[in-house]
Image (cartoon, rainbow, N blue to C red; front, side, top):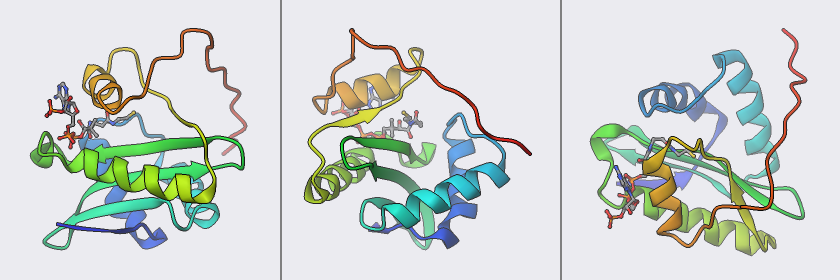
Amino acid sequence: MKLRIMTPSDIRQGYQLWKKAGLDVVSYKREKLEVKNVLKLNSSSCFVMEDKGNIIGTVLGAFNGRRAWIYHMAIHPDHQRKGNGWLLLQKTEEALKKLGATKILVGVLPTNKKALDFYQKRNFSIMDHALALQKDLWSK
Ligand SMILES: CC(C)(COP(=O)(O)OP(=O)(O)OC[C@H]1O[C@@H](n2cnc3c(N)ncnc32)[C@H](O)[C@@H]1OP(=O)(O)O)[C@@H](O)C(=O)NCCC(=O)NCCS
């Protein structure tokens, strides 16, 4: 198992993994554009985990100067529940802290019990005083 910084050339394989892990991804075109931007702006806090040359885990840690967000935390179903998610999360927390982040946020669907348990066991708490709102600026 190898943990390393994610690069744009990992996006294609990453996309297959995200779909396999059940992440709510958008089109490949949009993901590629967005993830490329995240990697450009966060060159020390986005990681992949490899097993025998295959990507089996990803995480994007994005710091905007005030808050840090985690996106695309995913472990291949064959490699889940073995501590791999924790390794990736720990590495990302360290990298974001080094950049100056003092709080990390992550969006999780209320039905995603696996992820809710995962993050809460790692001392993330559910925000009960705020809702996330969104506006879509994507045009094809
Ligand atoms: C969430 C996810 C990244 C966890 O990765 P993982 O490698 O399986 O997690 P770990 O093995 O490091 O597990 C750490 C802890 O998370 C919790 N957890 C992990 N999988 C779980 C499951 N299936 N059910 C309940 N809790 C779970 C447990 O508390 C576990 O600790 P334990 O094994 O000592 O009980 C992985 O399940 C995944 O990729 N899910 C699909 C994609 C996804 O939903 N990502 C999150 C988007 S916000």
